[in-house]
Amino acid sequence: LVLEVLTDEVGKILGRKGETVKVIERDSGTKVEVDKAIGKLEIYGRKDCQDKALELVLAEVSFAKVAGEGGEVLKDQPRFKNANGAATDLPAPTKLFVRDREAGKVIGRGGETVREIMEKTGA
Image (cartoon, rainbow, N blue to C red; front, side):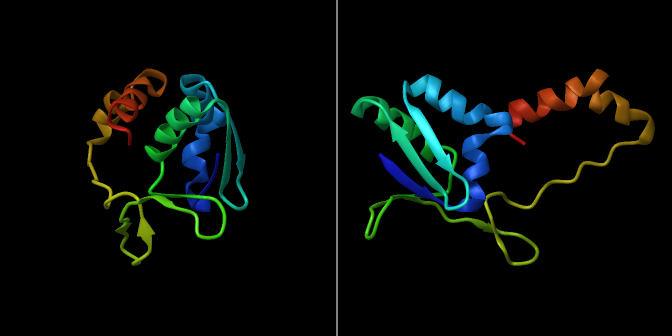
Protein backbone atom coordinates (compact mmCIF):
# COMPACT_ATOMS: atom_id res chain seq x y z
CA LEU A 1 0.00 0.00 0.00
CA VAL A 2 1.52 3.33 -1.06
CA LEU A 3 0.19 6.64 0.28
CA GLU A 4 0.97 10.30 -0.22
CA VAL A 5 0.73 12.76 2.67
CA LEU A 6 1.67 16.43 2.99
CA THR A 7 5.43 16.78 3.39
CA ASP A 8 4.94 19.09 6.38
CA GLU A 9 3.00 16.29 8.13
CA VAL A 10 5.61 13.56 7.69
CA GLY A 11 7.01 14.51 11.10
CA LYS A 12 3.68 13.63 12.70
CA ILE A 13 3.93 10.11 11.31
CA LEU A 14 7.56 9.70 12.29
CA GLY A 15 7.23 11.22 15.76
CA ARG A 16 10.11 12.04 18.08
CA LYS A 17 13.03 9.69 17.39
CA GLY A 18 10.73 7.62 15.14
CA GLU A 19 8.47 6.77 18.07
CA THR A 20 5.11 7.20 16.31
CA VAL A 21 6.04 5.15 13.24
CA LYS A 22 7.35 2.39 15.54
CA VAL A 23 4.01 2.36 17.38
CA ILE A 24 2.14 2.19 14.05
CA GLU A 25 4.33 -0.72 12.92
CA ARG A 26 3.98 -2.55 16.24
CA ASP A 27 0.22 -2.06 16.62
CA SER A 28 -0.56 -2.98 13.01
CA GLY A 29 2.03 -5.69 12.36
CA THR A 30 3.37 -3.89 9.28
CA LYS A 31 6.60 -2.31 8.08
CA VAL A 32 6.28 1.39 7.15
CA GLU A 33 8.86 3.12 4.98
CA VAL A 34 8.72 6.91 4.82
CA ASP A 35 10.19 9.21 2.17
CA LYS A 36 10.34 12.54 3.99
CA ALA A 37 11.22 14.57 0.90
CA ILE A 38 8.05 13.78 -1.05
CA GLY A 39 5.66 12.60 1.67
CA LYS A 40 5.43 9.03 0.38
CA LEU A 41 4.58 6.16 2.73
CA GLU A 42 4.94 2.52 1.79
CA ILE A 43 3.13 0.08 4.07
CA TYR A 44 4.17 -3.58 3.82
CA GLY A 45 2.27 -6.49 5.33
CA ARG A 46 -0.94 -8.50 5.06
CA LYS A 47 -4.02 -6.67 3.78
CA ASP A 48 -5.73 -6.60 7.18
CA CYS A 49 -2.53 -5.29 8.80
CA GLN A 50 -2.19 -2.63 6.10
CA ASP A 51 -5.76 -1.52 6.79
CA LYS A 52 -4.97 -1.15 10.51
CA ALA A 53 -1.79 0.83 9.69
CA LEU A 54 -3.80 3.04 7.32
CA GLU A 55 -6.28 3.78 10.11
CA LEU A 56 -3.42 4.74 12.45
CA VAL A 57 -1.75 6.93 9.81
CA LEU A 58 -5.01 8.72 8.99
CA ALA A 59 -5.41 9.55 12.68
CA GLU A 60 -2.11 11.48 12.51
CA VAL A 61 -2.53 13.54 9.32
CA SER A 62 -4.99 16.02 7.83
CA PHE A 63 -4.51 14.86 4.21
CA ALA A 64 -3.71 11.49 2.65
CA LYS A 65 -4.32 9.86 -0.70
CA VAL A 66 -3.42 6.68 -2.50
CA ALA A 67 -0.18 7.33 -4.39
CA GLY A 68 -0.16 7.72 -8.13
CA GLU A 69 -2.03 9.68 -10.76
CA GLY A 70 -5.70 9.99 -9.83
CA GLY A 71 -5.20 8.23 -6.47
CA GLU A 72 -8.22 8.17 -4.19
CA VAL A 73 -8.21 10.88 -1.50
CA LEU A 74 -8.57 9.08 1.82
CA LYS A 75 -8.63 12.11 4.09
CA ASP A 76 -8.85 15.84 3.41
CA GLN A 77 -9.60 17.56 6.69
CA PRO A 78 -9.89 21.34 6.66
CA ARG A 79 -6.98 23.09 8.29
CA PHE A 80 -7.09 26.15 10.53
CA LYS A 81 -5.39 29.39 9.50
CA ASN A 82 -2.85 31.04 11.76
CA ALA A 83 -2.36 34.80 12.27
CA ASN A 84 -0.35 35.03 9.05
CA GLY A 85 -3.13 33.36 7.05
CA ALA A 86 -1.08 30.19 6.52
CA ALA A 87 -2.78 26.81 6.95
CA THR A 88 -2.13 24.96 10.18
CA ASP A 89 -3.61 21.87 11.84
CA LEU A 90 -4.24 23.55 15.15
CA PRO A 91 -6.28 26.51 16.33
CA ALA A 92 -4.37 29.45 17.79
CA PRO A 93 -2.53 28.50 20.99
CA THR A 94 -3.92 29.47 24.35
CA LYS A 95 -1.55 31.52 26.47
CA LEU A 96 -1.40 30.80 30.16
CA PHE A 97 0.34 33.35 32.36
CA VAL A 98 1.94 32.09 35.55
CA ARG A 99 3.64 34.10 38.28
CA ASP A 100 7.41 33.67 38.33
CA ARG A 101 7.34 32.06 41.75
CA GLU A 102 4.76 29.49 40.52
CA ALA A 103 6.50 28.55 37.26
CA GLY A 104 8.49 25.78 38.93
CA LYS A 105 5.27 24.08 40.05
CA VAL A 106 3.96 24.05 36.48
CA ILE A 107 7.22 22.70 35.08
CA GLY A 108 7.79 20.17 37.84
CA ARG A 109 10.98 18.36 38.82
CA GLY A 110 12.95 17.70 35.65
CA GLY A 111 9.97 18.91 33.61
CA GLU A 112 7.83 15.94 34.63
CA THR A 113 4.65 17.95 35.33
CA VAL A 114 4.65 19.88 32.06
CA ARG A 115 5.54 16.66 30.18
CA GLU A 116 2.58 14.89 31.80
CA ILE A 117 0.26 17.77 30.85
CA MET A 118 1.51 17.58 27.25
CA GLU A 119 0.96 13.82 27.08
CA LYS A 120 -2.57 13.99 28.49
CA THR A 121 -3.68 16.89 26.30
CA GLY A 122 -1.71 16.16 23.15
CA ALA A 123 -0.21 19.66 23.26
